[in-house]
Image (cartoon, rainbow, N blue to C red; front, side, top):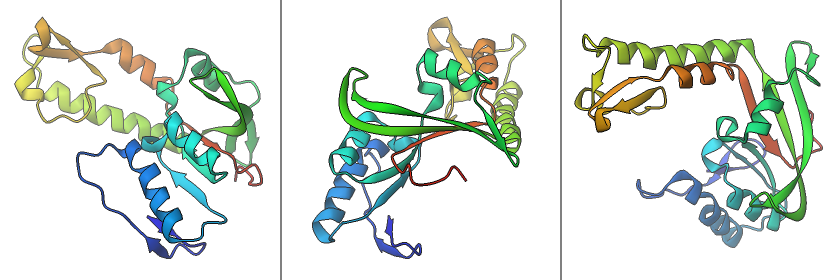
Length: 202
């Protein structure tokens, strides 16, 4: 959906249910550009749109964007940067740090554009992240048999398998303690990328 500066909807497009979220941004924006005279626009999108081709497309059009970054899918070096307490600022309860990075294609070819990464931490969000994970784990444990396993059939319909691992060729699942412990490290952290360097973090 596209809105004006007051949040009033201007345009929307419905895609078939089998179209992945990352594949909707470019055709939608091309349609917008074809119908309206797009001079100044800022794209605000969630992690589902945070793929390199979408960002490269926006940069090629010189359009502004604020996009959530898939932190847990980031590189080992990036995750270490997030967890490193160095450079974090506590501004009246808002805990964050920023860095500017060069945009590139496949992490190799620099394209001349820059984006700002903003990493924030919130205790409120940390509690929410923990609660969401606990609900998934609790629902799993309710289905456990005497061997602490859940059959594939009993797990059917579960949307998130990331805390469970298959055994016996996928016939059963068990809790993946390592993944749970890894996920806990990032409770409360949130990352987004933007080329709107004129905006404050707040």
